[in-house]
Length: 310
Image (cartoon, rainbow, N blue to C red; front, side, top):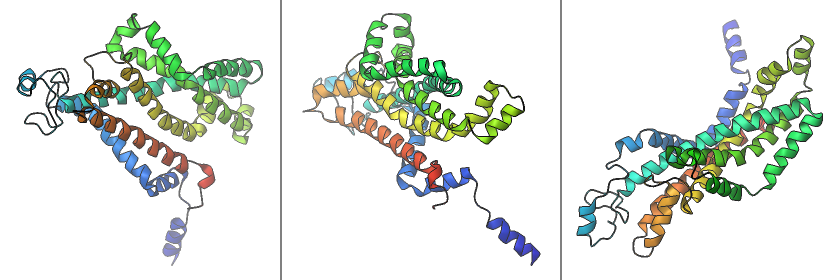
């Protein structure tokens, strides 16, 4: 009986916050579907271009000539999704576009964390003039239209080293990241303001722990949930911004194949060859929807107000 009683007490212990959040996330079917698609997208971005049937820049001119100088339709002999107007394999170019979109999403969020977290933490912790100056600067950046600011940076710096490095991808990383950090800064500032008067922070102060260590070792780890949610929900915006820039012709340089540039190229053939628009647009929509579903699921799972209800 004592053994059974110990087992019963162990089984009755409440699950930890991480396990509880994972349980709630697993019950959200849309979030699970989004997570699966995101994992598949990450794998495709990592190994897909290496396994592509054709290099994304190679033209199959013989097939195009045999088809009357028109793009090949899907399910052709050597091109499962057909080709574009220049004879390049559409499936291979979609895989290259997946690599571009994933890299932009991840690097932009890294830039957001590097800029937004320190600014928000400093503003929330020190308060006073530092908070006022940093938040007014944040408000100025926030008030400027994001897409317009990105376009201006892309156009002005396009002929510089930043604009030419990595086929223009480095400039895209910086342009989008420099406009997307303001939400993160405001979020972190709010978290720091709500936690810096907590008892564990007062205890750390009483033992002589420095401000930097308090923020880094105690406050920021307790703010990781909202930060993860903000990063996940910020990824679709970054992917869409990159696709928009490539669609209007100031994004990734040719012959790289962004989904936005593929949609732009395919729009010229939309009446006769709609697959040139449908496939890249569908890939973009699936990626955006999956990250959004995952972000919404993480927000619900990590919300402290929901703990204990399920």
